[in-house]
Image (cartoon, rainbow, N blue to C red; front, side, top):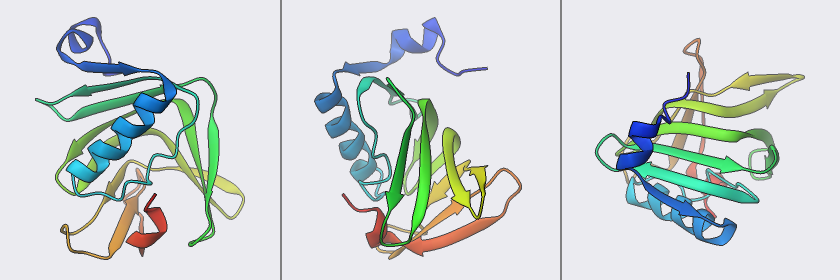
Length: 139
């Protein structure tokens, strides 16, 4: 079930338009001390943000598959992405998958240990995690 209910929308800041939403996504990532290239979305229709809970959602026209060249990883971004932002952390992430060998694996959490850390860790629903250089996800 999507956390984006009419009640949630009523308390959210909602942005529309590709350019505005992409800039807001980067700004939110920076505000929470995360690499600003973690959400390389395209053709964004809407971005919502509920400051009280940290809920962030992105709706885009099409699924996007992006390759982070510095780490050689393909990541898929669904048409709807939801998550909760905390300082140095994205939790309860949905709509984002990473390709490992031939399989797409859902990511549920992305975090850095602290703002000065040079590593980003990505976690799956099973608790398996992988750590990468933070610079690979900078815009």
